[in-house]
Amino acid sequence: MKDPRPALRDRALALGFDACGFAAIAEAWPAAARLEAFVGSGRHGDMTWIETTLPRRAHPSGLWPQARSALVLGMNYGPDVDPLAQLAMRSQAAISVYAQGDDYHDLIKGRLKTLAGFLVSRFGGEVKVFVDTAPLMEKPLAEAAGLGWQGKHTNLVSRAFGSWLFLGSILTSLELEADAPDPGGCGSCHACLDVCPTKAFVAPYQLDARRCLSYLSIEFAGPWPEPFRAAMGNRVYGCDDCLAVCPWNKFASLAHEQRLRARDSLRQPDLADFAALDDQGFRALFAKSPIKRIGLNRFLRNVLYAIGNSGDPALARAARAHLNSPDPVVADAALWAINALSKGTAI
Figure (cartoon, rainbow, N blue to C red):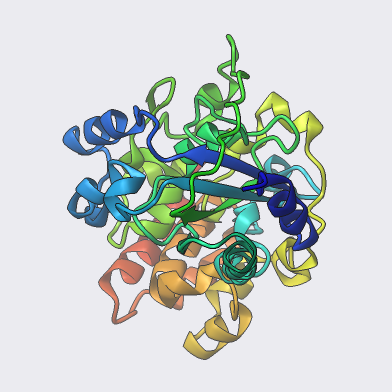
């Protein structure tokens, strides 16, 4: 059979993907040992699904035994402004770059299905499509496919796009020639480790999710430990610090997909406006956004912590409006915010 890879790459680029690589499923999978150590030490926090799906996560063949090869696709979501600059605007909310546009899961999955259909129609075989929601470790798979390497911040680093690549994968029963892994690396740089506001990196390439602001603001449902509340600053959804500081971003470019670019309403949003949202307003504002999945109360908790860190006494009124919230976590966050503003203890 003629090598399918050139045709598949061309089709992937035509569909709007920025990177396409191929990996052999039979290759050794050192990521399994790292994942087991991560879970064994409890660093996955409340993300119990990682532990319960560990056997399937350990290797792509555990998810689908018939898989022989993987196509790994990357889509650039590079921002047009430095995410770190928003952290100085303390009365405004900072939102992770990936969540300022439409939900990438929906956007990428549709195009992956189109590419998978092209693969089957032209070259045969069976396929399965994955975008972050299944127990498939896509970052080590992308590394094996030559799209980049996992940096010291544990995220993928690309020579062409820095730290700003969304990933999707197609597993196929066909035997496709694998691409060579990217030999690049982080060298002696440790900027991503140094910038972390909560010191969530136990060591290079080792993250303790329980200390990570992205985990706490998105995955964790309860009240935060107090030291992390002050450390979050004005980050109300996710944290980009370790990504944004990476020197490889000097090669990054603006996302060409308009739906992945920041919405005007999320560029410099006021904390007071976010604090005033009710459920209907929350759903309307974050329609087609990944932010919607955490729900209004978890979002308000984050906003109230950020208000406490703002140093802006005028925002105390917005916090007081939630003191009698029926959600105890929201009410606790409101009280903390008011106390932090009155004492001036927040950073």
